[in-house]
Length: 476
Image (spheres, rainbow, N blue to C red):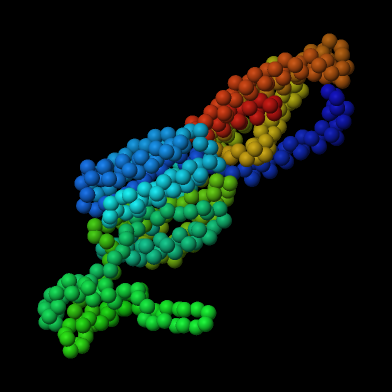
């Protein structure tokens, strides 16, 4: 059995080809990320009560919510802040809560929030649970307004949403966050003289505007099977419709239109709820998340092409640029890995040629790429992504990959020098070294096992190092 490959050259070549194809195909299809994907165990609960002071917020909102949350065993810590008008509670789940159980924990928390809502004071907003992402954006792109005029956020927002739709249509895009798009509002600026001439006050005008948007039925349609309410299409879905709202200003049924006594326009909320500045210019930014099982380099190429095409359609004074691209960092780490493999291979060959001769050096040097291919193949089977921690593990393991090969080749060479045939020398080396090398491999693998089994964010982040080293030692 030990000389099977020595006696069958075709089987040896076929096995080497299978390992190389397995490793290369795995390398080309493995998900590539800058950092390992971490489980989101942090969230923030925000509740608003306009006009209430900090003491009222603490007593009537924060303490009641914390009392409900104390019944959930998956919660590790809660930190709360009560200030004028709002309550903020930060939640951290236990490290022992696995990825598959996290959604269940958040569901329990939402159920508790629904239970406590009726106990909160009137005019209090629904407590909102926001899960915090534990990963980096794949790409951030920004559309900037570089004209000398006041920025038109309506144009920026519209163009930003159009680009968002194009990026969402790309394979692999998970979701996109909009940054710097302030909320818009409809402003009715009353002409005081015109309003006084028709004998109305601002409060009376406001009441008539609200009534014009009331959602009430205009009648009912009855049949043997159904009773349907009829409603006139009166949604205020455009500025023109708002300007055409009829305003009654006398008991004789006299009317005028809102646009005749007021100026109606769409503008951003003052003060703006959020703004973005890129190099000092007003901007609208898009932050993109890509699915964790998708290759970021492939997605980045298609995204860059879509952005370039969109850029060509922009008018003067508008600039579209990529301000962050995770793919650049991933490529830098891949280049570092390739460089380390190349330098290590050259050093191994040079040292073994000097100490053991060119034949032994060739055999030992082959162990490095073959073992690396096996590691990549097993990472594909285990669904381990290529990221900075797994790459660090591979670099750490480079020195361990060739130890076994050096020991075995040296033993075979000495046996052949002593006069044994090649087949006998191989059998003797395998029989003599099998148990010691197996014990050495197992002890090294077990030494890195605690890193793989470590729970919580630390284990999820550093576990790739342990997995890479263990797979490399086993492959060698």
